[in-house]
Length: 260
Length: 302
Image 1: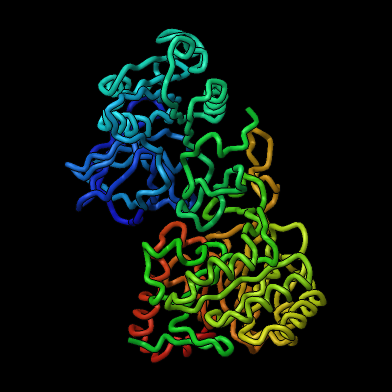
Image 2 (image 1 turned 90 degrees about the vertical axis):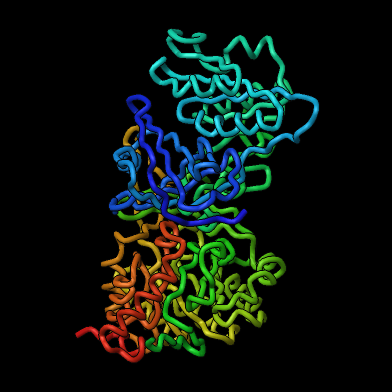
């Protein structure tokens, strides 16, 4: 897939909660094809200390308005700069990067997929859920967070399919972690996709393995170039160290060497 | 339009802007962004006699105006390079240079001999300055005697342009440069990364799996520039300067300090088109200041 570098214009920058924001940016021309699970590398302007680009997964792509959405967690100085961006600011992106989730064929038999997200890891699952729906399949969301405050844009996910929730204090949804949710005991699926904190994804991978579900995880290894040149973001796989910026960020759990 | 052509040994570069090993892959990774015909050359990823898996993750951490890496020369080995990568890159319209590294003198020599037979590779860059491998690498480049030994051995078995890449992690870089020159190096390139480290205070652990790593980016530029300046006074062979170059003005500083050509490293990660922009910037500078050739600018510090 061809990669591009270009300036985008901020169309909206909306705070979601105390440490997340939704940044919408538009391109002056038609969007190239983008796959759910792919990411962009954002240049942080006028910030010499945080000079590396920030890799952010694509939350949605809207080809009608040449717009993409980026659901971003405030982590440090780089993301703080992005949170401060006003409408009409310019933002330089390298895009689209990475492989994306593997999508099922469009087929007459409807398949049911479980999409498990935690924290800002829910971002690419919205794009993925929309794509699955378009292919005639059923996405079921299972989203976990520490507290109700930390659940992001749930009403938008509800428009794509059933949404099941967990919070650690149990105030919303079931109490505990996503892998303890009763849904997993009573339902079966044609496959699982997950994105979120590493311990969560490893627990999901262990669950998927025990039920022999095909399972893909989206990794977040620290990266520099984003295009497979620097070899910094490697994940140890069954075929050696592989860059997650080109051979990921999405990997099938069969490729990984996780001790689960 | 000024004359941008420069000579490094028998090598003729269409302009002085090249890309640094380890930051540009094999050039292939950047074809969506730049036309290789616009730049002087590409120094490809460090290549060793046998395949190397590199160091465990995490290998990179951002620091103030820079980054630390500890990739550890991950590559598939010279035979894989010859069979699978060379056929793809041999027709790229720029100078394609292999960066050669090893654990022993014999490794370096064997690797260089294999590259010597490749028609489309006009030069090698002998990496005696990689800080991220346990054996070899920088160990050869921090001592005049071992630097001399390795350059001498490779010079005997390698017939084309031999560039020796120097480490800044030494007391006096000019002594190492002189040793390389005395044993027949056609040019020296400097600097490789500066040894450094960073600690995650919440975890009370180093950020890198190897504890220490190589620092690159704008934060090392003054160190690199000083070393190019000193080395220019110490040797007669051409210098390829690098270390934190992020724009044309930075590149011109290196040329004024004595570099015949420059390499762009970490800046490629921030802007994949930066190398071409720097070529244009140097050309504009030469026109604006009335220089006929970029060669007149080398060491032209007043």
